[in-house]
Structure formats: structure tokens, C-alpha cells
Length: 453
Length: 133
Image (tube, rainbow over all chains, first blue to last red; front, side, top):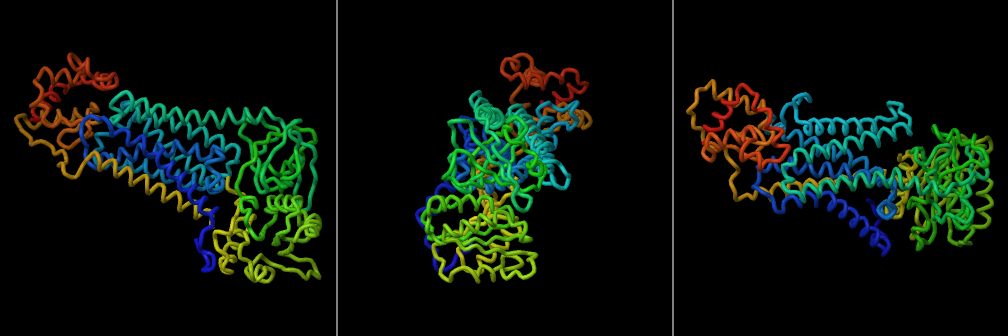
């Protein structure tokens, strides 16, 4: 990370955040490796050569990591909070590939050392647990390929998600069978029990994610109270919780929404909450017609049931209560979480200085531009519209949100400001580079990636 | 991307620690002081054809999945020198999972050994094991 010379000392909040990150990573490593080291206790016989034992250890930890993949995407709030959910999903992706590499190494080392020890490859003559291991490995490779090439294969998101969950669960079960069946290190009942219980935890997690959480969601049916068109093919859904309930959230957080599908159907999609956190009990989601699901939003009917699992996410002004001011950078529908922050700050009569850089293609499709004008009168807010294709006579900024645009409008003195960015990937990348060029410390720049799933 | 590269960095660091711990596990089971298990010297009292048939049966019957001999197979349970430890009758029991062996071995191991009795090269296999001293 780059930091400027001016503000390198960490604040208390940053120290706490770093501590939490290390704590959770340490816990992850412990959960993955402790069951391995438990095998050392009370074991019969000595080592089997370093390479052999290393290969076995890779098999055990590789499987433990693959089992824990479920926990990473189980939306466990406390574990994801120090990182942000987008980082946790990227982490899930990279760790899956690394764990797969470990399991492949487990197999390759054994093959290299002694092919005879693997027995016959033909499933008709091979031991069942060895075939299970081979199948599990092949399935894990398949799961990874489908995930990485989902878009290239034109695999629809909902279908991919079902396939991903089913194949990964099957592969885990086969791998656990392989482990307990070959069990050279599980040489007494309690070790066997430990690893079976470990596998049981994965099943428990699947039960939690696929059954318990949908059940909890299904107990609170929300209702579509209004569907409003906005500029730029954006639709605002106004959602009301069941009577007597209210959703408490921080501005910038998001909700998982299912429409016209059971909460058990795994057809939920994440959307930023756009309404003020100070008003309730309902929420508003502002959704641009972009993908398979969002294009159908406009056909939603008032009175329809909506399933809402919320709030999630760590992007927002409330994470930085000590900030002297905020700089918001939005591209297109990336305005939604930032709008929630602006509306909330307005309701709280916040007097801190705010800047909003808002990039769009054409003026007519700038979603919420009228409301932003109103907000600018209540808040100490400077809105800078940047248009790619400005209308004739446009005197404002045009093109992209570049270093020059930022430098032209930001005050020379912006120590203590936090920067929040939400938009398409290319815009986020370029904004991050521009801010680095303006000597804004990386620790003060926060971005939300909205196509992480 | 700041956030993606951060996630990548965290993932690689975590996996690195995990691999280092796996290496530590292997090292703890094989402290550097102790010599690696070496194959015992061969006492070639059998004819080469019968020896080859016994050795071939050892891998064909899947013995190598759990046992190693002459550096072939799974070193978990080495059989080098087994001919010096067991007499012919005990060798047969442990190969087939009968007699005393039946009371000690797990069900999975007994199942794995149950095919040996039908093998035409069973005697060659037992002789092959017996000559390892």
C-alpha cells in the first residue's frame, strides 16, 4: 500500500482493524492446521520419509481449506466485517485455487514417489476410497473451471450457483471418504472421530447457509410498496418489512433480495440500500437494468412478496466517524450506496464538507440528479458532474474522472478526509491511481466492488 | 485494483503459512537426526522368475497401497525384513487376513486382503515376502 509522507501514523481505529484482520487470519490458519497436528499425538510408528509425510500433510490441509471455503461465503458478519465482503469473496476465489494446488501436489508427490502406492487407477479394480479421492480431485478442478469461465461459458448466474454448491458438496463428501478410507494417519478412534466431526461441521455450515438462513428469511416476508422509474434505466424498489419490524442498517450496506422465488431457491442477488438509514421501517433499492435479474425489476408489481436478507457490508461513512469530511466518487449506478450516505448525513444535519464526483455518459440519464441538487442545499456538498458525452453548451467537466478533475475541485488541504468510491471496475481502478498521484494515503481510500459475485 | 490485490496478497500469505506448517508437520515426524528408512539388503535365494512373479503380485493385488518393500509402495507400513520377523505360517495369515491376523486387522484391511487367496501367484508372493530379511 502506498502512503504519503504526511500521514503514516496509524489511528486507533486502523490499529484495531489490523488486529482484527490478523486475528481472523490466525484463526483460519489454526482451524486448517490444528486437526493435522492432532495427528502427531499418540501416533504409532515413526516418520515415513519427509516427502511422503509432507504430501500427506498437503492432502489434509488442502481438504481442510476446501471445507472452509463454505465458511468464507456463509455471510458470517463478524468474520467478514474486518475485511469487507468483496475481499472475502476474492479471498475465497484465490484460496480455492491455492488449496486445489496443494491437493494436486499431494497427488503428484505420491505418484512421483511410488505409483504402486496409489493402486490401480481403473475404478473397477481400485479400492473405492481411492476412486473417491480421484473423483473428488477431478470435481474440484471442474468446480474451479466453471467458476473462472462462467461468463465465457455463458452460464447463467443462478444456475452456476446451484451447480457450484452441489458439485463442491459432492467433492467434499468424496474427499472425506477418501481421507477416512485411506486413513493411514487416523490410527485410533479419536482421530477418526475428530476428522469425521470436522466433516460434520462442513455439513452443519451447509445446513446453516442453505436451510437455516433461508428459514429465518422466510419468517419475515417483505412487501413491494412501490416501483418507481428513475433516470438512466434505474428502478427504485420501495420495500416494507412485516408490521412491527424494522431494518437497522448503516448507510452503504447492502441487502440480498429474492423476488418471485422461494428463499430456499438460491436466487438472491445483492443490491445496495439507497435510502436513508435514519428513516424506516422500509428500505429502498435502486437497481439498474443490467443483468438477467435486474432487467426484470421493472415488471415487479406493488404488493408482491420480497425476501430480504440484510444488512451486509462494511462500506460506508459510519466506519469513519472521526473523518473531517468525505469525498465520494461514483460511476453510474454506483451512486446507490453513496446516495444512502448523503441522505443519511442530510437527515442527521451533518455539517462536514462533502464532495461528490459523479461520472455518467449523458446528462439526461444522470440518475437522482434533481435530488442531488436538493441535498446540496441541505448539506455542505459540492456535486461535480463529469459527462462522457456532454450536451451542447455544457460548461462542466467532461470525459472521465481524472486526476485533473479531482485536483481542480478538491481543496488543497484535505488531510483527515476519507474517500469512498463505488462504480465500474475500470473507473474504480483509475480513481485509485489518480488519488495516489494526489498523495492521498491508500488507507483513506475505500472502494466497493459491485460485480464481485 | 487495490482491494483485489489486497485479497490476493492475504490469500497467498495465508496459503504460504499453511504450507510451511505442513512442512513442519513432516519434519516433526522425521527429525533430521534419524536416518530415513532404507530398504533392507536383498537375500536372493529365489529364482529370478519366481521373484519377479511375487513382486508383480505385490503391486497387482494392491499390497503397495499400504505397504512398501524394496522401495516400492506406501512407506507407512514397510515390509522390508518381514521374512526375518514372521515364519511361513504367520506370513500366510497376514497376507490373507486369517488366523491371528484376522483378530487384529481392521475390516477395511481384511477386505483388501481377501482377494489374495484366489491369486495364482499367491505362493510366489509369500516366498517373495519370506526372502526379505
